[in-house]
Image: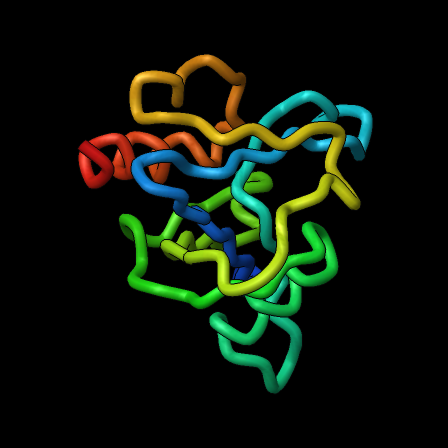
Length: 135
């Protein structure tokens, strides 16, 4: 009897956009079960796209900004019951001011404020890694 083939997790990327020592956080507007939880802006890597290209595209679509992608923050993070592999990267604004196009709210958070919002559980390890890198 053949075992059902387990699909490998889809790669999603998040941008830890910096402004000085602050990081941009975004509150989910949907789906309902995730609304109000906070994340790093980003999304799925499409076929034929690098992770950096996906982040640039997603930030353009979600925030109306152009970014420059920097180094990775932390390791691979399994999210969505193991169906997604999240990779977070530092990013810097190259052009524009972030607008909440697809999110309920945006906030710039200093290291001491990182725990002031309820993060998606899958983003929490990256938040903890960021705290140490920003101080």
